[in-house]
Image 1 (spheres, one colour):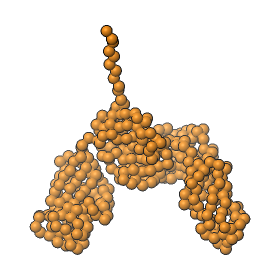
Image 2 (image 1 turned 45 degrees about the vertical axis):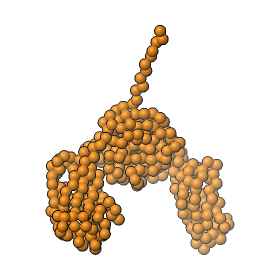
Image 3 (image 1 turned 90 degrees about the vertical axis):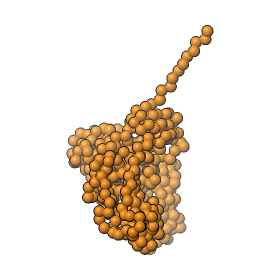
Image 4 (image 1 turned 120 degrees about the horizontal axis):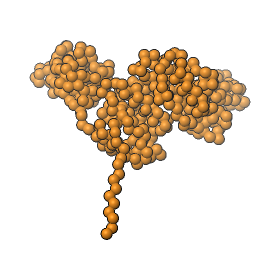
Length: 402
């Protein structure tokens, strides 16, 4: 009688905050706390990016890249040995006295080779005009686009439209259209070779500001600073919950640091962002909560004023969207609404319904939520800051994740 062997395949499973960034191509993982399934993407098929989980706030992610992640750009001669020295100095006794661990400092070892500047005008030459095209000649680089500025026929500077990629100071020269005898050259500091990213987490220590972290990097030994081009806040803009980055290693590093900073935020312990190499096979479980309340009757024109309606939160949630709607649109002027939590507005840009429209969803200027944390029993009060003309039947909807 033949033996029957039954095999089982077990996949990765655990909390979403611990989901590997990235998963390997075709690797499957289950996040038990959010009831989601994930699969790793082939890097060759994915644009490098950082994505906000669909049940999290893009504004939180934007705040972290603006205020809590530092990027230091180094030249082409930066090495792993120099990186190790940087880590040792930043985790030792840096000045200012920031408090960092090795996990706060990550090196993207992918070579960039982006031309940031052409700072040396060796010979201004003659016969040039502003806008004359610069051609970069390199055995490794491609994609550079730039022109010169000129005065009285002499080169005075350069304008770079695209810094390209994979250029090296050691093998790049330039030709310039139209004039004669002009020569421009790169210095090591003109070419961005590598990046190191550092988490500036104020929840760890009050001194861990971006300004102090970048100052500490700039105050390291000459072995490091001789290779340093610049150090500043990481920045970048999330568009449609996605931030494009240079490469997949950078995406993984910055994602890890963002989630590390965000892990100390209340209700944010299931991770904030993931790399584009992790494909979401199933949506997060449905914890979406919404509340509606009327801020007027259904027959009279609304009027501006405070305290038009109120209620107390029956449960806590993270506010992700606020909508307003009308039974009858305003015929002149927009309707402007404020939502206050315990007497303080939740908006940095107020909610509006444009003239002749009946919903805020189509507003030319969308509302921006600056404080989306609503706790159980918080008092919510609706103000009408602008009533328009003839608008009737104002309804406010709060949408969020419990």
